[in-house]
Amino acid sequence: MRSIKGPIGVGIAIWLACTGAIHFYFTGFGFPEPLKLASLHLMLAVPPVFLLYPARTTSPQGRPTALDWVLALAAFLPSLYIYLNTDRVYGRSPFIDELSTLELVLGTLMVVLVLEAVRRALSVVLSILAGLVIGYMFVCEMLPGVWYYRDLPYAQVVDVLYLMNGSGLYGQLTGISATIVAAFLVFGAFLQGSGMGRLFMNLGTFLAGRYTGGPAKVVVVESGLFGMTSGSSVANVVVTGSVTIPEMKRMGFPAAMAGGIEAAASVGGLIMPPIMGAAAFVMAEMISVPYLNIVSAAAIGAVLYYLGVFVAVHFQAKRLGIASLPKEEIATFRQVVRDIHFAIPLIVLITLMTMRYSPYFSAFWATIAVFITAWLRKHSRMGLRAVFDALVDAGQTICVIAVAVTAAGIITAGLTNTGLLLAFTGIIKGLAGDSLLLLVLLVAVSCLFLGMGVPTTPAYIITAAIGAPLIAEHGVASLLSIHLFILYFAVLADATPPVAAASYAAAAIARANPLSTGFQAFRMAVGGFIVGIAFIYEPALTLDGTLSEIVSTTLAIASGIVLITIGYIGYTDGKLAFWIRFLLVIAGAGCALLHIVPEWYRAIVGIALIAAIIFASRWYFGVSGSRMGAIAPNANS
Image 1 (cartoon, helix red, strand yellow):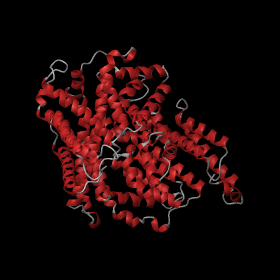
Image 2 (spheres, one colour):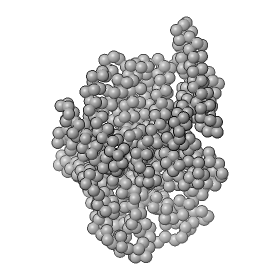
Image 3 (spheres, one colour):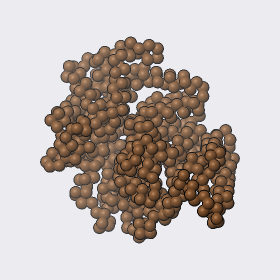
Image 4 (cartoon, helix red, strand yellow):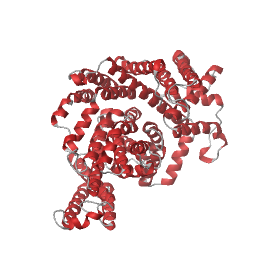
């Protein structure tokens, strides 16, 4: 992204701040009609992308080019036309009432500009994917078999993507981006601007800094807390990783491992209640489930994910001989309490959502609470400049998320208005046959594939459109469980090689090989893959069951994750033999996922195996005896 100074930079900042302020105003005082809101949303969000993000690495980094200004103006006009002509859109019959020449030009222009904005600000992969779907709409009549669809004239393609009410550029997904997602992006920007990151850092060092592998455990706590408010795994890596990754390297973690730990911890913030990422808000609208229900259902899974990361960090630190943080770097209880007033906005948010207020209305008052709460202490007060900066940050993020979600809207419009959706579902269904397990694995792989370089929200939307109905046909899981499963794999794609945005960002900070960093992140995040699959087979994981079922399911999956983690780390109090590691992984997978065995049996077996391997290792390696010295030279192998 460009760093633009001078009058142009000030002008862009004011535009972004107004974008954030307008969306914030709507959350508290009501939204305009859906089509006006969606068009205004893109009118504000798309033009700044061309000014902030250069077309190429060789483009000027300190100022927009003349072409960038032309594209920014061009991106404003199609949405302005929709905003001024909503009656025309509402009153016409798609495919019957002809489009005017102006509408054809504006529609074509807007689609092209959205694809270019996505390429610049986010991902060339997502831009190409949307382009392929559009290209399919032009050639579908010439394709054989399941790929065939009737002829779509050029005007009908533009109609589907631009002018059809509820479809394409100004459809439901753009509306979600303009309401719930924007509301929480403003809330998150105010949390970060108020200094809440300091509370997270101090709380992390206070809780985890004094234990083995302290620096990495601080990362797990801090990134999980910060990730709830940032809504972006990459943003989480950049903000927290710039401090934590060098600290982990200083304490003895290899560069790739330090980056992998940060990446794995950062992606988890998008599945950590009570806020979670933008995709969770989209899920609430797509399946008509209250957001509070989604947060509640996701809570145990998020804790299990971080349990896996925590256990991995602990045994890696023991293997490397890394101790706790120095005493002077560990926050005191007094330092934590100094910023504890920042918990009030989160309490306000949770309370309002518990009272069944809408998510965006709850976010509005929680944002107000951030500003008021910040003034409770002199060191955290937000003046006009801090408020302006928070609105600028919110506006900038709104712009990026808007073009990503709009690109997903283009893809879903192409999928649903042609035979492409049926083609993909038919292929997956044909490969899976009657096997639910194979179907689940194919959908999971699809999520990881679509998530390669594609932001979580559009990856989730696209895969949910394809995979969720197929899994729902088997009738073994609720719609909420199915969508949580898809969300998990869409989130974890950011940490999964070969293309992993969070891992690449962490690798850049750590100055490590991106593939090695991605591999480390993938290993650390293994608990997330287990939990994601378990959502399909274990309804109690989403609190759908008796207390006994919930407890037993949680213990069974937790013990399985711990066993798998010990198995792939290969170390407890000494280096484990390969055959023991292999058996631990197999046993862990069975405890976590072998749903045909009662949960309490799996939980008891898993806990017994964990206790056995730890106590046996301590006895064999002689932690307090002379054996430890004998194996010390191999500890880092």
